[in-house]
Length: 223
Image (cartoon, rainbow, N blue to C red; front, side, top):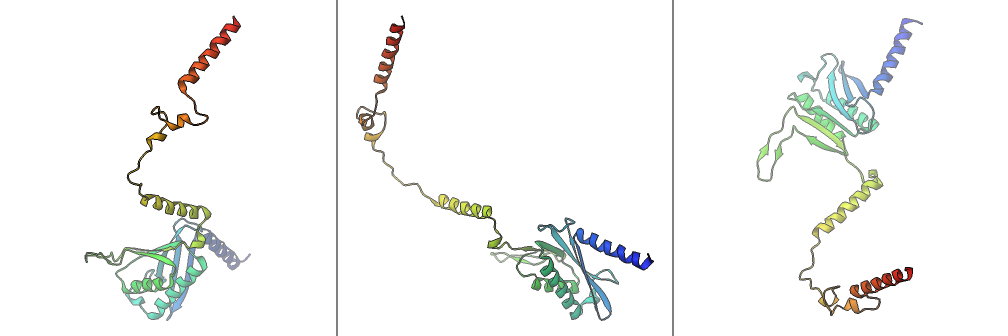
């Protein structure tokens, strides 16, 4: 087997191996420069709940620099990520912010194609109700998590949801006020106890005396 054929087989085997490990790479050229969008699963596999880390790279410099801000480059990365999201349908993925403007533009483009995901962006400023502002971390983590749809809920999840709603009802339930007990119907409290006078009722003392007499009679017969 020729060297080229062997190399081809090895590269194909590596491609399959990388796929099993949860790696994804798309390469494209813009104005003669080659770029790559890379997604690597944190768990090293294709499990539905695994996290993916996104990276953007200029193949020559192995990074994205200030010279990579061409609109065509940004658009190409946007399309590459969009295709990956559609193909892989990941549960969640993340990347990191940067002080470099081209990376910031790429991330903003990714936000536009990652529809149906909750965004947790630590690079963004947070404004509180009192008017104070917490500044974001420019190099912080930016995470997209897939939103759970109603159809995705299992019967067990739905049952738990219904139970939670019932618990809320119980929480707001108020006990009735001024509960009055009818003493005439309280068992074993007085001679006027109506329950003791009902049909089928019994007197503890009478029953015990009857039981004792029966036992004495039985003992007399045995003798």
